[in-house]
Image 1 (cartoon, helix red, strand yellow):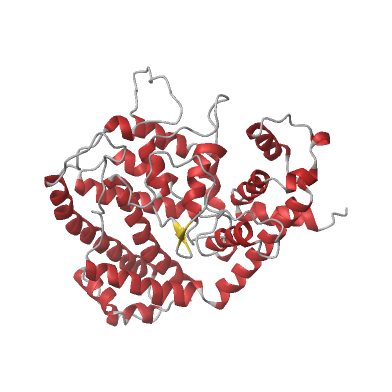
Image 2 (image 1 turned 60 degrees about the vertical axis):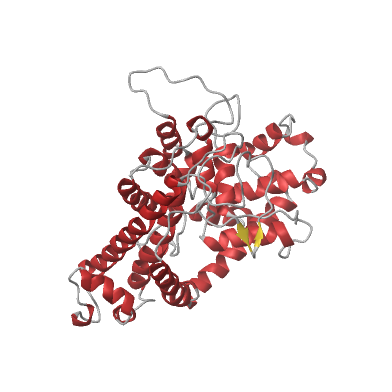
Amino acid sequence: MKGAPNNSSFLNQRRHQEAPEDSICKRDAFQRDRDRIMHSRAFRRMMHKTQIFNANMGDHFRNRLTHTLEVSQIARSIGKVLELNDELIEAIALGHDLGHTPFGHVGEKTLHKILMYGAGLEEVKIEEGFKHNFQSLRVVDDLESRCDDYLGINLTLAVREGILKHTSLKTEGALVEFPKGHFENMNLEKESFTFEGQVVALADEIAQCTHDIEDGVRSKLISFDMIRQDPFIEKITEENGIYLKEQTETPAYDTRAFVIKSMVGYFIKDACKTAIPKIEEYIDSYSPDYSSLYNCINKKCIMLSQEVEYNRKRIYKELITNRVICSEQISISDAKSEYLIKQLFRAFYTHPKQLPDYVLEKYCKRNDMEMNRANLKEDMLRKDPNFIRTICDHIAGMTDQFAAREYNHLYVPEYK
């Protein structure tokens, strides 16, 4: 089956005009987007950013990059069945977490608290929020670069919109306040306006539920007995010829991996079975209004069945949230990470000239100022919301290791 018709010129539009490619190996717009994301510095840095478990806890735990690749694989598997645009799916999936902070979601929450409420730095608060999907869009629009003529890597609207909407746009029940200028032609109240964007959003949830369980078992925060006693997981595995009640308390790696593989496959099949009739129904009723910018998909069609979605949420809450995210081990790690990020923010805010040249140069360029350290007035910088957002951008872009080294560099005296 094919996706609903759409306005290709609308989906392919970029913020800055580009000359068409003139080569034997001419790529379409979404292929170019995928390649720009893959070759970006932010993409490489995800290798050293926490998913749930820090890298010092073991070599085989997932990081933000391996999670991203798994989301891409799951999304493309669903997209193949639904006959969607593979390049668009891959570009959205590879770019969806570019804006993630060091130390996982605690980094995201800490930066949000600082910007919105001060979080011990009351003079800093600018009552704008932070959420990694908004930041991912900021990365591709402003913080990465591909030429001297403009900021950003100039992705198509469809990829940018899919990146933004891969997860909720709300925090604490309210739409996140974010610097304006990024959301032209995006309806923040609706699902992604492409089936491909909706597929990536679902693939992200599937990956979190399944692969984070595997990491939880590896860490021994989730026992194999807990998995074995879950009737929904037992049902999935028995369909694949795995009878968990016959396994030992400490299953071999192959058994554990096969359980997760079975769960991923089950979610993918259920998503396809649920989506196909919804897409067909949508196409039958499709009547585009080309007088409107929002002339693409205006209905959520990519989802799990009601029963499977209920069990996905239940398993995530009972096993991952309760047993892993709220565990003593992760809570201690999160507390350290929150403290470290607050101290980094405090250092750069109190003494702005501790920021490296490349950060100050970007700030000056955005504000049409000459980059001259002697002429930068620290009192004026501290009063500028754009400068506070610049500190946030700098910290959000750090890897776990770089953030830890930077803390030591700023706070620990160096003696030889």
